[in-house]
Length: 141
Image 1 (cartoon, rainbow, N blue to C red):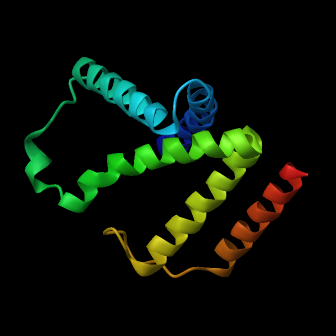
Image 2 (cartoon, one colour):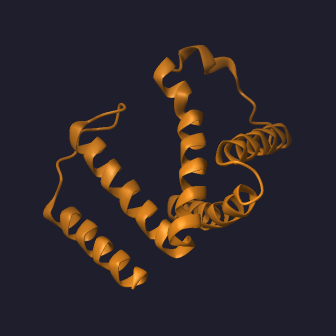
């Protein structure tokens, strides 16, 4: 149940972040928006980490170098969402973002990439993605 609640919470904040990032992007450049957002997020995470007493850095050396670039993915997410919301609106941008997220993770799991357990793509997953794509089409009408 905690996983479901956290996923819903993350989705809520991703939607809000896309809209607020687009507002920042209207005033400054796209990559400046990404820089500001990532910096504010890093400071916020640091404060929460300290307050929650969960600032365990001992395992840092054990993290695969590839995974340390995950934050740079966040910068691309921010920059892309700023442009997407600007050009197609928040609703369509978020719908497409969700489809891209699900499609990507289905493929990564199917290949067993990024240390995930290999999981074949089931027919219901293809159906789910197709229905989401259809939903995005209806949302954009």
